Amino acid sequence: MNFSDSEIVASVMTNGDHSLVDQAADADVIFLNTCSIRDHAEQRVLNRLRELQHLRKKRPGLVLGVIGCMAERLKEKLLEDEELGMRVDMVAGPDAYRELPQLLADVEGGRQAMHVILSDEETYADITPVRYSDNGVQAFISIMRGCENYCAYCVVPFTRGKERSRDPESILNETRQLLAAGYREITLLGQNVNSYRYHGESGPVDFSQLIGLVAAEDPRLRVRFATSHPKDMSDDLLRQMAAHPNICRAIHLPLQSGSTDVLKRMNRKYTREDYLDRVRAIREILPGCALSTDVIAGFCGETEEEHQATLEVMKEVGFAFAFMFKYSERPDTLAARRYQDDVPDAVKTRRLTEIIDLQQALSLESNERDVGSVQEVLVEGASKRSDSQMMGRTSHNKVVVFPCTVSRPGDYVQVRITACSSATLKGERVPDQVADR
Image 1 (cartoon, rainbow, N blue to C red):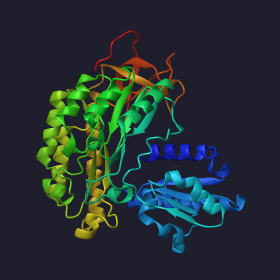
Image 2: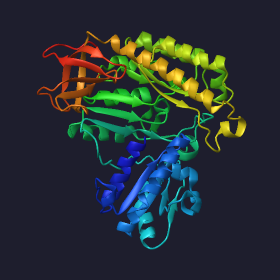
Image 3: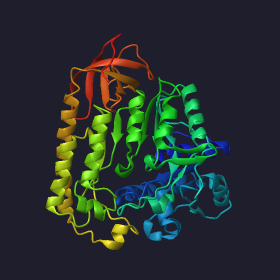
C-alpha cells in the first residue's frame, strides 16, 4: 500500500511542476512515506530523518516531510517534539496527498504545515500514479482504502480511516493504461481486498466480480491481489480464480495465530477451525494453489500451548512463504488498552525463531515439490547476483533464476525446475513446451 501511495504522491507533485530525482542529496523536497504497523518501522523512520538533517547544511531550503500512517498517528509530535532530535517541516496523513503542493507553499512561506484529517470518501481514483523505480513489468493498483476490522494489535483503522472502494471503471481504466504501457502483471491492493464493494447505478460490484473483470481485460495479464482476510475469503472468489487461468494461483491469507483463544484476543473474528475450513476450500477449488501467511509471535497472554498450536497449523497447511514478527504493542490499539504485553521479549524471540525455522523447512519442502516440473515464468529482468542469469516469478509467486537467453522483461518463458533453495527455484529454459499449471 505504501508503494502505491508513493506513486500517487509522485503524480501529485510532478503535476505541480516538480520532478523526481534519484538521490536525496539532489532533492529540494524529501518525503518519507511511513508505516506504523510496528515500532521498529517507526524507529527506522526517525533514524532516517536524523540522518537527513545534515543535508540542510548543503541545501538550506531543503523541506523534509513525513507522510502516511506515522504522520497520521503522531501528528503534532513530529513538528513540536525537540526530543526526537530532528526537524520536520511538513506532516501529511494518507488522505491529504492532494494538499501537498499547498502545504509545500506554506512551508516555503516560513511556516510548518500539517494536514492529517481522514476522509470517508478519498480514493484518489482520478489520479494516475507515476510508475517509478519499477521493472516495467509489474504494477500495483489500489482498489480501496481504509479498514474497519479493528484487529486488537493494529493501528491501520486509526491511521487510514473507514473502508471505501474505488469505482470499478476507474480500476479497469488504470488496468488498460498499464497494459498499453507494456505491463504484464498487476496486483490489486487493499487492507482487506475481500471487503471491496462498490455501489453504482448498475448495482453492487464485489471483489470476486471485480477481479474477474480485470482478468478478462487480457489473458496475457497476470493478476494478483493482497491482502485477504480469512473471515471474508469467499467460495465465489475462489471459483472466479478457477475460471481465469491468468489470476495467479497464490493467496496470501494471514493466520496470525493458530490458537482460537489468541485469535479471539486479537479480535480476528475467525477461529482456528474457520481458518482451516478456508484452506480446505482453497485446496478443493484451486488444487495446487500456493498459500502464504503472516504470523505474530508472543501476542498478549500467549501461552506455550498456544504457541505450539500456531506451529501445528503451519505444519498442517504447509505455507510456501510467511511474514513473521514478534508482537509489538502499538499505542491506542485495543490490545494496548485492554491487555498487558506480558510475554517476555526473550520468550518472544525464541518463539519467533522456532516459527522462522519451521517456515524455512516448509518453504524448502514446497520448492522441492516443484523440482522436475515445467513452470511458466514471467521474466522481470536480470538476476541481482549475476548478469548471466535472468529472474522471474511463477504463478505461485516463487522466484525462479535461469541462464540468460534472448528473453526480455515481460516475456513469458517455460522453465524446467532443476534445483532449489528455501527461497529460490533454479532452472533452465525449455522452448516450445507448455508449462505445468
